[in-house]
Image (cartoon, rainbow, N blue to C red; front, side, top):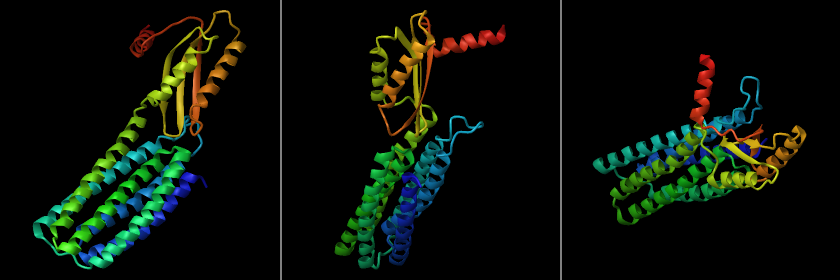
Length: 304
């Protein structure tokens, strides 16, 4: 079993246990903050299970029908996860407003405080584990899961503070205020996950720093006359690169391949956590065209 799959299973088990604890205390005590945390943990469970199947699908080998693999399933999962997190944030805000208006009383404060303390410790350990897996694998789904549980950690801490204030002062409005703030924070945290997933689906270029290093590798090769048409993208698991290399018109194809292989090896060393699919093209002269010019040329060919 891959580290990514194992991480989603661990996260699911932890989320299920925390959900049960928080729901029991949240419903019994009437605390909006604890109930909000319970709903968030329930979503954690569903998302972690969904992530397991997303990773399983993304790790499938390429086929004749899906020749580039199914790596973008991770990006789709990230967008869905971020959307669900956002919706949960709005629901928590709604519950907080309802409590502020109707002013329901919070009971069983001591058990609620203990549940949140346990939740903070367990979530902290889980976050450390997920961050390690995310660092080792550079997997978008695990990074999203780690980010989500990090927001849970802060949310749990906020709930604990709210319960402590209510316990000491008896001000029920504090529970509603903290619940509202947690909802806003959850929505904010989901934004980054959604954006990263959409960027992958739209084939955004690799990070500017990596692209610059690729430019340097191509520019510093003395046997390459020039290059153009450098394009990069990723599906979250594989980095896709293509470029045109300009060689001396009379260079042997064997030599061109040798030079290209050396360049590809240097590019792959830029990020050993990702697989690379590099597609070079060899030109005898510099035929630089823009996207629009290529499209216009294709259109003219179809008209002839």
